[in-house]
Amino acid sequence: MIRDPETFNILRDTVRRFVRERLIPAENDVAANDEIPHEIVHEMRAMGLFGLAIPAEYGGLGLTLEEEVLVAIEMCRASPAFRSIAGTNNGIGSQGIVIDGTDEQKQRYLPRLATGELIGSFALTEPGAGSDAASLTTSARRDGDHYVLNGAKRYITNAPEAGVFTVMARTDAKNKHAGGVSAFLVERDTPGLSVGRPDRKMGQRGAHTADVIFEDVRVPAANLIGGKEGAGFKTAMKVLDKARLNIAAVCVGAAQRMLDDSLQYAVNRSQFQKPIAEFQLVQAMLADCKTDIFAAQSMTLEAARMRDEGASVTLEASCCKYFASEMCCRVADRAVQIHGGAGYMQEYAVERFYRDVRLFRIFEGTSQIQQLVIARSLIKQAQGH
Ligand code: COS
Image 1 (cartoon, rainbow, N blue to C red):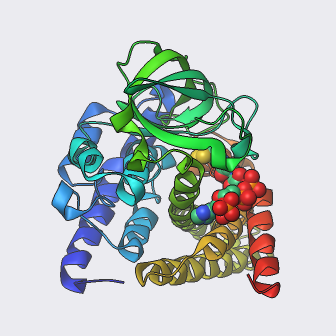
Image 2: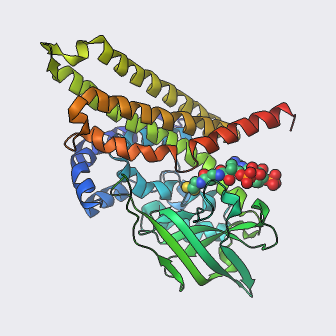
Image 3: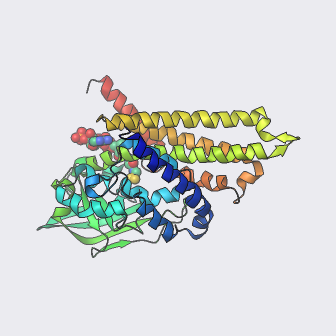
């Protein structure tokens, strides 16, 4: 749903110009230094990019999901690291509070997440609980008006920068399944919480992940999301439904950038006395990229509109995340191929994107988990549930 096309187009044009004039020129430095320059983070904050998905009453832009997805597509024409620093505040680092938080939790955290003054992070994955998220073992034991958390989380996006974590932990030691899990808001400076060294990743330099360790971390009971024990796994899954649509948009943006670069390369690079774009085998790769991107974009926008209208989109979000992330890696492969030897060299952005986008088929639920969610939903429908 686009509420006011005129206002929205101004935002979209501003983001498009910012990406072209500020983000793309800074990409190589971000990759070399593994850090986004402070001035750029500051400009992103001033533009409201940390609060796209936070309701206006808490200081965010309160975009609809269709609007948010369109902005994400624009942002991701530049290195995914730029989107990642604001991505958790718009997505998994704030949406647990937006969807299931109490009024008090919303008032305490959302305004600072919306401005980017506070970075939010989502701590679900553990060394022993990846795809099988419900098997997590981080424990939260009630002690008076506090809970005491113990355990370890792994590969947590923006952990090094985060000021507040949404942490899924088991409050019912006897229930080993989803129903034993609760979600907590844990502030960074709480004694006993420590963040490991940033992980050394294949790509996505400038975007950081790390372990988060909890040793007898005392969290006020008021920070239990929604004030209800046992609802944390469902909160996490609802957050992921929306996040998966956002990742699909990220894939569309990155793929479009790789196609743009490949097209430029193909019209400028000559072999056999003519631009390689005039060879049909190269044309086939360009056409396949465009078709893939158009399909992923169309389905992502359609699913976003469905969610804006209040529908449950668990199945559709998984379809979009699955198709768009696989599509993005196909486009990355063709983009490197069109660039030939140059595509294997660090001077060309496609070499970096090829490594960066590989993550999209893994995080926020692997392609195989998306297949499982889609098939399970279909079977449930067929069984009349
Ligand atoms: N929205 C609301 N509720 C949901 C839901 C959703 N999208 N998905 C599941 N639930 C509910 C189920 O309805 C069930 O509730 P009841 O017990 O009341 O029926 C409960 O949550 C448990 O669901 P389920 O039985 O499907 O859990 P499973 O352990 O079988 O696992 C998968 C479900 C595999 C889908 C889940 O663990 C998953 O998404 N894994 C991937 C994790 C991931 O994406 N990690 C990325 C890191 S976080 S960035």
